Amino acid sequence: MNTRPVQGWALPATAYALFEGNGARYLVLSDGRLLCYEGDAAPTTVLGPGPRPMGLLNDVVLTEDGARANLHDLSTRVEDVDGVGIVAAIAVEGALVYLDEQGALHRMAPDGERTVMTGVQTLHDANTTTVLVSVGDVLGIHGGLNGESMWLRPDRGSHGERITAATLLDGGALVAREGYAMTGDEDVVEIERWGSEGLLWRHAHAEVVLGLASTSIGVLAHDQSGAVLQLTREDSKELLHASSGVRAMVDLGGEVCIAAWFNVHALGPDGLQWTVEHPGMPSALSVFNSHLLVVGDDGNDWTGPEPLAVVDLEADVFDVDPSELTAWVPPPLQEDDNVPTMVDTTPSLESEEDAQAWQAPSGLLDALNEVAPKTSTDGADDEDLLAALTGDATQTVATPFAVDLGEHREVQAGPDGVAEVLLEATVAGAPKEGVVFAWSTADGREIGTKARLLLRLPKGTHRFELRVRHPDGRWAMDGIQVHVA
Image 1 (cartoon, rainbow, N blue to C red):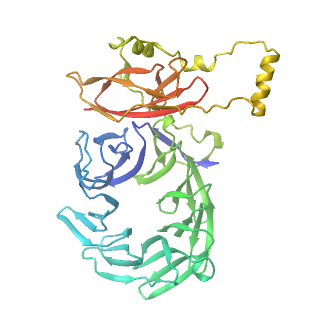
Image 2: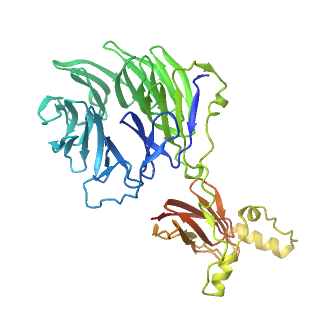
Image 3: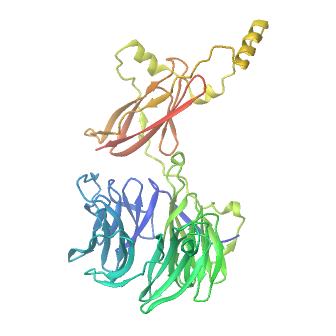
């Protein structure tokens, strides 16, 4: 399989978005932190945890709760619960266009902010002068500064339709729609090319189209089945059929990269050129100098953060066995030895029952390897078994089994920047003896096998998970987040 060289950078948490700005790239982490990547070293933190960043303008960060944050503020940001949330944001040259949850479209620029228009349902695309939005059921192009209507797409059919994708294109728009009717012309999935003088062409398609883009290799569309199509006035041609739907797309100039499943595929005018693999499902791509940046999440909290992949676009394409595509993946970041560490001294316990809980279950592995003692059977046991199998025995219902770690916690660090935190599990529906506990960090590292866990944690946000096994073999799980300020 053809591929390119990849360098990997381990991250403290999974990144799921990339911003461009200030001659660098910014990674949005799952805990709301922002990391800056400048191309010559590992990314560095430039914004502390908090509400998710949605856009960047110079040194000002727009967050999902409608608040503003400043780069290089590493303190923990608190959500503005009274603010108007942000639904979508698009960076244009010298400004940030964003839609809030009340349907107001705004333009944020260095010289101030303005409300462009209200009543907007969806922000599809934007550039320096215009925006493509849906107001109610009507898709249209409007002025990016004053919201003035410049073009409105005519409605089709009497049963209604859904705009599944739309983008600005050469003074007009490219639109994908799906009709709501069950039969007839209105249920057709179609792609439409609109110009300043009206409809230029229209193509029917078998699958719902989820994305459209004008690229260096032509006008492209991708559908929910994973097909990537090259569109012309005359027809459409399939360039690639990925194993799942496309989650991100970026133009390299002469090639277009698409992210699908755990791969990034580079497409030329004639189809697939090369492939790289990521341990997570790529959700964002960005070109930085002569490199392609890839981030993504595999959706499995047990495996820990996924890395940043940096693909060398100037290196030669080479052939490799598909099993070796992830040879570049770096090991996860090593936490400081005291993050977290078990406190050596047992905390004071109020009762003998608590003391037994603290000293209970042995390791998970030992519990799983236990061998049941051999027993002999006699006729009475056979009769009991027969009664159970025939339904004559007394029926019992298993008690609901659950574990609860309580609400997320926020604690204050001491003068040394470290806080002692006691985590306790409340187990319902299980006996006092024979219960097995397995505590782990967010990256899956096991750190304890008792009902209570006393830790020394530095400043920051930490997540822990607990799996509990009932003596009858059932499992229950819960997680807790601890923020040390």
